[in-house]
Length: 231
Image 1 (cartoon, rainbow, N blue to C red):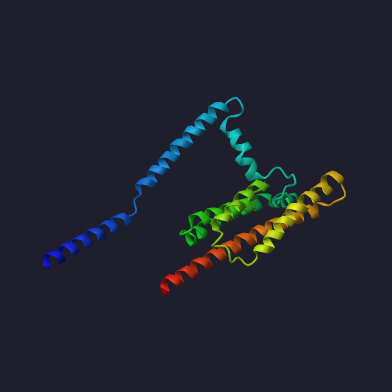
Image 2: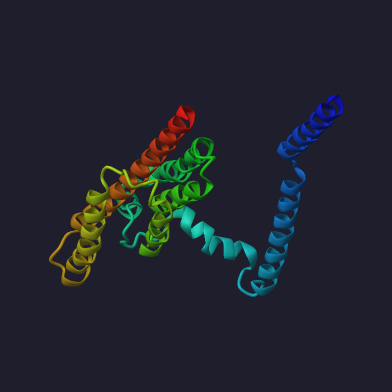
């Protein structure tokens, strides 16, 4: 009897030790990941420098890609809101507002990661929605990407309060935006403010979608924790 108890205790001890070893966090995979990312990035930059040496080199490539986006030099009308804002703002305050708009997204990364660390897929959805919302040159494809991911969280987001309102809003903006653009740019009978109003409505609907989806997901997780605690 004592031998059986000792065997059970030793078996339980091995299981506990195995579980504790599995729970230990290892920095080795993280370090290897960053090493391979650094090697791949360096390899890509070397190839880009070789191919772009007759066209200004890497500096010209970065200026025409990331620099073009960060400086917001092109103020052509689009479905975003930055083109109208920087067309109206004084040149003296342009650099200040550029820093504000670009740094604004950085303040959301860490709080959302801490709050939604148990939902990595949903966190990726929120990040994509915020990036699409704050891009200097957004497109319809940016919204289509994160809206297509909503089907992954159908059960969790079933209790969203303004789902029908958001659906009607997105449909209305998608119909009015090309009409206002045509009236203003091609026919000359419209106004820039009408087209900008559709862009503002589009941005507001995206903000409501992000806030409501995060709230619905947190409420769903809260209910699950209450049910687990009750059982």
